[in-house]
Amino acid sequence: MGYRSLSTKMKNRALKLLNDGWTEIEVAEVFGVSVRSLRRWEDNIAAKGEVNPPS
Image 1: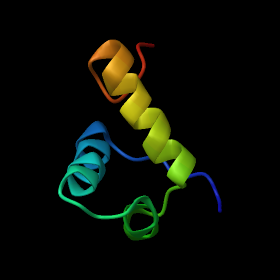
Image 2: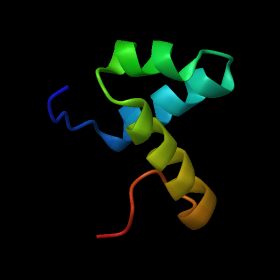
Image 3: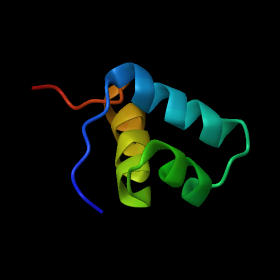
């Protein structure tokens, strides 16, 4: 899978689908990202309150 950059809005939409009951694999396929990316975004929210780490 190649590198794909998503906006913060799209990352939040992806995480909302996870919260709505979609599987990680389903969301990853729809958004063209890895499951690891989804988990990293969740970790960022838990640790920092936002999907993207501070620059």
